[in-house]
Picture 1 (tube, rainbow, N blue to C red):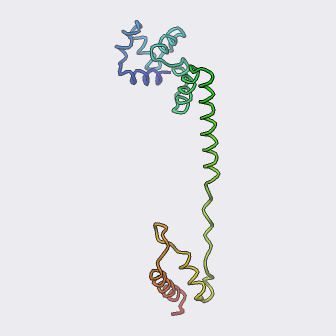
Picture 2 (cartoon, rainbow, N blue to C red):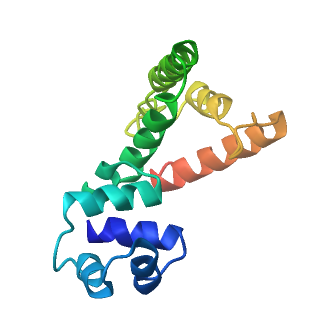
Length: 165
């Protein structure tokens, strides 16, 4: 709770002394709350939640960005009339559906398989297949000139590595 009080004080740009004066609380009492030495009574929690404009749970429960966002959504949507609440619900449902579609659309990376058997001689067909499937770093297909250059480099390197040069 002490962290929540500190967070709300910071949002209002207040220090403990200023806050205690505004609320009519003893300075040392508020200081003890902020330092987690003591815990405020429920009536004080109620007064603080009204002052900060938050639910009591925002003061007493462990803070997380997600719970804060959901709390804010609930606080605002509960003030709407029912037809507008249905719009919020439909929007949330639509967003969830879109999110799930996006997750399903993520395709796993293809398994890398060798283009040729390193223990047998490198054929022209295997070499041609290797350069035909190759793309530049930016995903753009290689030009015919680049393919010929890579074929030459691949054959040279393969023959050096395998003693067939």
